[in-house]
Image 1 (cartoon, rainbow, N blue to C red):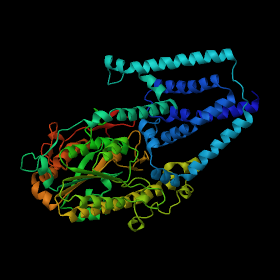
Image 2: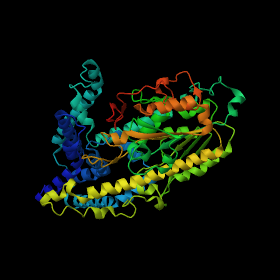
Image 3: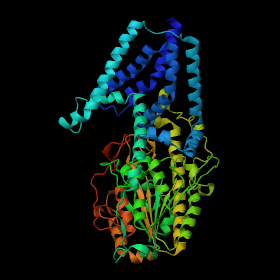
Image 4: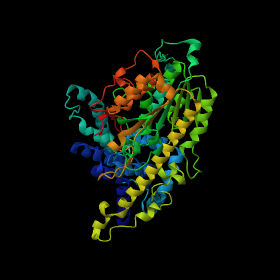
Length: 588
């Protein structure tokens, strides 16, 4: 190669390797020196294999297909200081159009820069790189042989790792094979493995559909102070159990939980009717994980159980309840779609991206329809709301712009221009000196709190709909997960972070009961009030919903019922990390 081509070749190769170089330096999930070394060797081997198989120009064209994956890896490293996780890949694939357009509208300049760099990459490759092999044929054959042998060894060691861990257990880690984990974290290997797991999980769900059709919990409706009822007697009581799944809802930003701002004035007016739990924690930090585990008997110890069993909604249906699923999100989640398709009534209201604001009030009309359609029948209604999901300013109308400045009308790009003028040299660019970090945190919190205010309004509207029926009714609201708002020196933002934070796991849970329901269930109401301070997880919701609906079944666990005096608090709560591995949650 001539000098100019060598320079361009080196530049393009470094550019292609950028996410891997960043990974060696930044990835905190590479736990030891051995993992970092094998991560680097794997990264270099992948591209060296490509150079052995393809001519130089063709090689750069081929790896350009990985450019998008590289961008995902870089973003994940910057945000989470970790290699791309399984759940991050799943979120990218399953993201809904409305959420995707909201993110693009906020970070459009990043997209422009991305495609501009891609264009320069293609130009330099076409202009300066010759379409010739980098090495003679004999040397390339030797290189392919060595690299293939390395990958065979890596696959062998990784496949043996569970066996070694069981035989030579030391704090659940076998250091004979631990270093080889670095191989499977190298980009694009981690991307390929993530896609494989997602496809295999989808296949597992579909392959169990026939078995699920025959699955039964053997539930029975057992009204308060009476024996189990069957046949036509089941439909005489018009109880309503409404389960409202909140989205991106932090415990500590609700006024009713002690927040200094009046973010939930309507719930405060109803405080005598509201039971608020102080210490409930979700087991994940993404909707994709949280909601299936809330609705099923799956746990971090048995994470795939919800593929082999039906949900609490079907358990209600078995006991004679009419079931309804009303949602404005999660249209691509196979598990939730399976539940919705099995309900007596299902309604999805989608955001087509053409509206300036898309709020949860779109769920009220179908809710009203369900409540008026079968007034004599017991009903379980699940509302899956969009809540406070980013972009927060799109979750509330202008009249709920209580705290300003917020994200409505703010040009985020302009904020990067302001730095601390008193700082000198590169110190001006440190995060603690940049005005954007100070201003952005204020704007994010203001926008988020406005979204909480609107959620308070929405919950109140739902309660009013229940009150209008004049039937025994109970509403249970729980946040699926929380949110990071640049809370500490880690500057964590949004949710789904690799390490997770207490702000993502500590969620609000409120229970409202109508006077008629309270009169018939005084013991349950008192038990809930007594249990509000106990540390529990969302794994209690499955059993508790059945208890609140006066439903019994053979395997019910009284220690997991928050409406019973037998509820057991937890000292440590285990959840699932971004790679779906069981781990203790940072709840303190």
